[in-house]
Amino acid sequence: MAFPIRVTDVMSSPVKTASPTTTASNAAGRCYTAAIGSLVVVEDGTVVGIVTSDDFVRLLSEVSDPEERSLSEFMSTDVVSVDASATLGDAVETMFEHDVARLVVFDGDELVGLVSTDDIVRHVPQILQRQEIDGHERPTARYRRQQETAYEKDDWDVEGTGLEDHHVNVGDRVTFSKTISEQDVRTFAAASGDTNRLHLDGEYASQTRFGQRIVHGTLICGLISAALARLPGVTIYLSQDLSFLKPADIGDRLTAVCEVVKDLSRNKYQLTTDVIDEDGERLIEGQAAVLIDETPETGRVVVETLANS
Image (cartoon, rainbow, N blue to C red; front, top):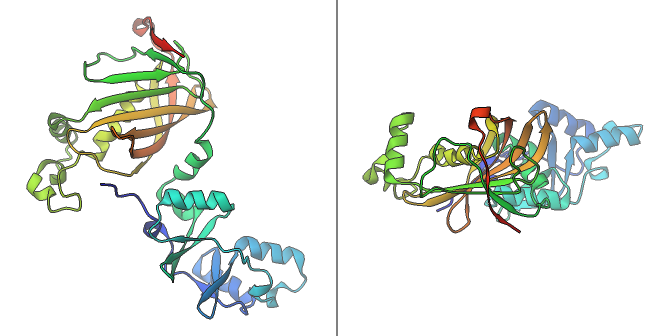
């Protein structure tokens, strides 16, 4: 049961419009008054263009009398649109495909809003960066069991790819899997103080949009921290951005997948941080920045190589 963030949740609405005959000075004044960066140009109920701050700057540089020029003379006519029900991920893909920073939003045939990269960044700051860092070439897999933790349990599964004994590199990947039990949920509620009845009271939860109890979102996030703890060295969180895409049921077996995508220098790294279910569907998508110090002498162990390919 997924509840992704959709365009309608973040778009600017109602959208500000102008006619093709509106002068540049009038349009610029309206943008300034409304503190917006663009106007959708509409003629006879049909969207025919869009004018942005970039268009105004270009006009100023190209003509000697910009104030009285009509929008039809310099507006962008290649308007890219998206449906209000589309996910933010779909919207970002459309932006990258067409190399635009704004999409006109329709609900059926009705113009209902405008969504920009600024709107998306305010709500889901990591989503645009994920488009830039996804798809990089991974190194040859080398699986190792890291032993940076105080103890492990039999039902926990840990795998690492490309990890060296005492160093982290771009492309290194670690996963941590466990089943979220009833006891986990109740223990987390007591430890954190989050005793929301959605997680603890079946009758109450049945009347919510989920129809049943679900696992705390922050408990699921804890699997990411668990995966990071299996990187070589002492991993310290600097920042974490997350999008919650789908809830987890009690009893689900979940896997946190963390991959190093950028060396930020001075022992700092950027990672993608996702949690997936047994079907491979993402429940959480995010990215983190971490600092990794050397392992103290008393904690250094021999790392066991499990497989190579």
